Image 1 (spheres, rainbow, N blue to C red):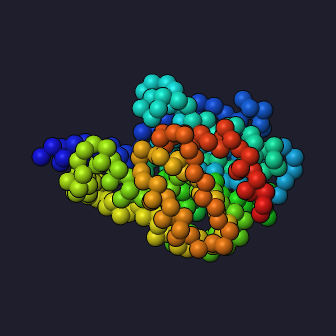
Image 2 (cartoon, rainbow, N blue to C red):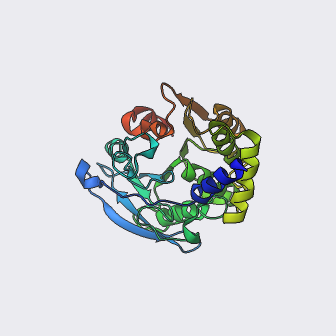
Image 3 (cartoon, one colour):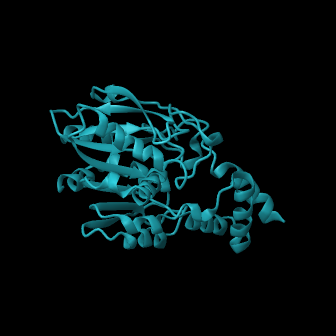
Length: 298
């Protein structure tokens, strides 16, 4: 059947991380930085940057990223990475805004991304793997003499956002002192595959074919990515941002994730005027005020 053939190809690549280059560095934007490495909870080596605030500060924002990006962003303006709109995602202006607003920054590569170590044959699944990277980043900050007493904020994106929610569900005590969080475009596996099936004119047959091939190739299930379930444990102030007409998902999915968050202080911001998911990843670099103001409240 054509749906099985097509979804077999999709399932083969959708969980495989294509490493993309780290094209830019903080010193190119006038920021001093330190190359750092630390273990995830299961020992996988993670690489990152520690960028001190412009003036001495006791606040740190921990930033992760989407797949297939890295701590720098995504080189979508050069071959062969032009398949997501043809434009660059550059996080450095976002870090610059936080740096100048008085925040230290830890920006790190999730496993199998950037310069971090390979694992799981290059496959990703936040339910099983990347949540351990989130916990490792917290341990790094809390275990370092110069940062252990800092107020911690989270800036988690797509795969990194889902992984953060899983980590909160599995180990809530690790997040009890977090001051505030931003979730940039969390996404449910079901919404992603149903939208993909719709875009490919495959409907329910496409969804079922993907689930079968996804299990056969990776041993994963679509429901492994279920941030609506994990969001139910969030107690810290949370800002969720999302491209409203994102062609990779349904706005209702993000609305449900937001609705599931029980935190008293929460906000959902829709990015409008585009259907390109990757514009959601560039948004806070191009429009940092909302981000800085959100952290500044807490």
